[in-house]
Length: 129
Image 1 (cartoon, one colour):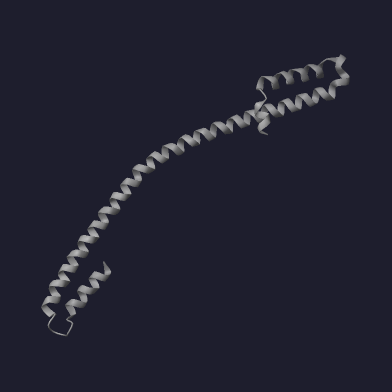
Image 2 (cartoon, rainbow, N blue to C red):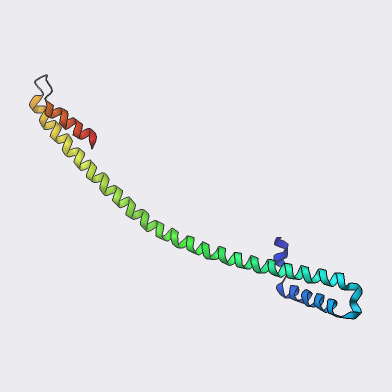
């Protein structure tokens, strides 16, 4: 159907007028089937070209919207990345504090072989976080 895009619209209107002229004039009664074929084919192609133009306009409009959303996507992605980085930083700081606390508590009980309940709760807290 892409070949039909090269037919100018004005030519379709001229063939429509020729078909109407051939259908209305009595002297061309033998050519009436040709005139009717010209009328129908011209109307069909005019409708096709009009519908194709409407769809092409919608496509370009949606392409513009996609470009705008891509620009917005970049800003949203940077916001998300900064949120993730700050959350990771908070988790690392909490984990480091927990590790330092465990190291301090282990020093107290390092020379003994028993594990006090405080160490178990500290270990569980570290596993939960």
